[in-house]
Amino acid sequence: MKIQFVGCGDAFGSGGRANTCFHVTGENVNFLIDCGASSLPALKRLGVACDDIDLVLITHFHGDHFAGLPFLLLDAQFSRRTRPLTIAGPRGIEARLAQVMEALFEKSSKTRQRFELAVVALEPGSDWTFGALRITPHSVVHGDSGGPFLAYRIEIDGCVIAYSADTEWTDTLVPLAREADLFIAEAYFYDKIVRNHLSLKTLEAHLQEIAPKRLILTHMSDDMLARLDGLTYTGASDGMVVEL
Ligand SMILES: [Zn+2]
Ligand SMILES: [Zn+2]
Image (cartoon, rainbow, N blue to C red):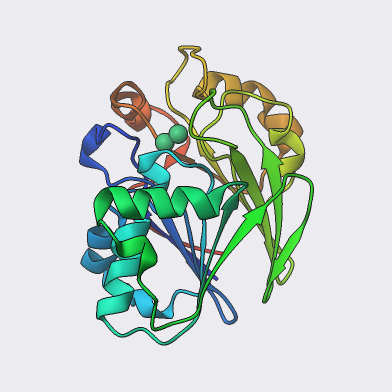
């Protein structure tokens, strides 16, 4: 299995990085985790065949994680996609998707797709199975607009990928990522504590308990990016590929 960081940036283009979008492929899986506004050009720059993607898993409705969907769907329509596509995310996703489609491309939410499009709302604590994937959504803490906010623990043929999404520290992150083969964690700041986001120092204090087999930091601010070289942690970069 392979994960490519298509985009690992924040909402402000820190470090010139594209908005959040991870592409996971394996024998039986081909899906995206998040689809921020800049995701379609980023996917194309990396030569990803978008029509082969079966699922887009959305963590929350902020533009840097969600607003790439209208572009992805329009491109699928015009490239004459036939393969079914599923979009899954927090409660309310159907209405949110229609809103963002209308805001960016008027009338596009009413277009009848040439391919089968399923939109699925996920609930924290309720496992969801999609083909070879077993997905456990966990509720995380990221403010009072743009939610509900979900982090995902994803199991594929016994291999576990956990993604914190955007969140301040919450104890949920322990079961979310415990002993995961790969934990992709937000590290927005190095040591500054802010609401709604996670700093590396806070995460570090819990790492022994979480015990991920591998940790990759993402969604870093300029402050965090400037310190990365001096640290022993691995930071994601756009285009980076991780084999699991
Ligand atoms: Zn974000
Ligand atoms: Zn966010």
